[in-house]
Image (tube, rainbow, N blue to C red; front, top):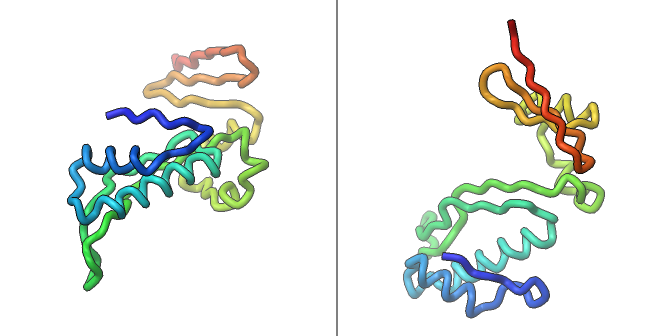
Length: 137
């Protein structure tokens, strides 16, 4: 399913309702699903995210609470060019959880794409793409 969102209007209730129904949420949980979808959209826009992936967005209940909809797992990526606007988000960054090669490359002002084996890719980020292969002999 694909749902186009007018960036000037933001996500609309009829869109979130249609998506909740297509995703098979129980009628009683559709409002909670809509609330989650709206919140995720707003997070995406306000945080300069490049990705907000929730898998799964689930129905269930916790303890004695009534059944509801909640995000079980998430993957979030943010636009590095917006770090100056998103200081609070970038302050939470844990570089120990990242590939040390990526961290070292970033500290040197480079973009690094690690590949399997003995091939790597360095790019300068200025519109030109330079590919360097490193082959061990």
